[in-house]
Length: 338
Image (tube, rainbow, N blue to C red; front, side, top):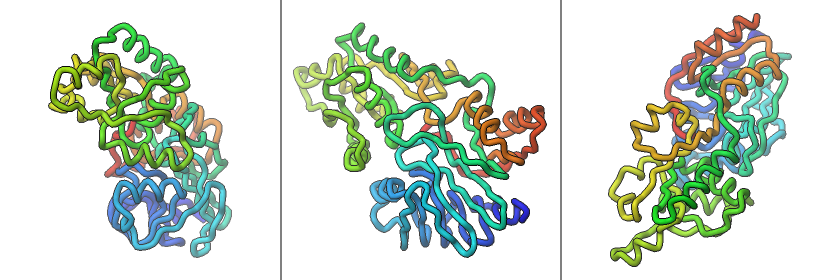
């Protein structure tokens, strides 16, 4: 069958008419397949949600147990039939529980990546390429300028700074789902075994990661009571917090706070400057330009569809390679969690 008859964009998101379901819909629908737990892909209010067990658990923590009327857990690699459409989930390497959505009917197979990355992440299963007729890819960092450096080297920058400025508190801005836990795990891998302090907004998700088998080591809540003695105990410590918290009065409770931000956008110096970041860490949960293009070559689909991000550049690259490509221009997907 024609790919567009199996999956096509609508104002609510990617829709599969034969199966009567949406993938990562941006508005409430009767049936949704969710690729991962970030808020721009996983929304509350759908009639039924199919996702990995981890993503369902994340949605329950973020939105409450009543986030959907009916939930269906689909482990990675397990195939189900939805009204004649074969559906399964394959690892995306983005965050814990993240998956590519694979749909197939009458010999036509389409893979929707959701958000993905190719480099190692100790908190989630690595991306697995799936051969397909149509590859629907994100393009958050879909420009040649974006090259993410080695993750370990970025984490070592943080540790060197902590050693260099023992009188300051390092406030690391990292998104609460995925990036925060990844930063913590990479710090542990580099031998940092002291307690890591976390903003209260991150407690529930960090607890869930532990419950799901991701060891984060000793964590403590970053609560500062009044008094110089209490404040001084955070000198030389690492505090993980939402990026938005760095510029608030909460941050000024710590001794001479040093703003850090872990994000792929820290490749752009102006972005770091605008946020008042002293120590930018280029650390992304999305594929960079080389990973995007290498993945397309590896999957080698008949068609490339690009859903969100720098769509035109990736499409142009594909065309120069002799590949059929088009930008889908879906709306409602943000750059958070990068």
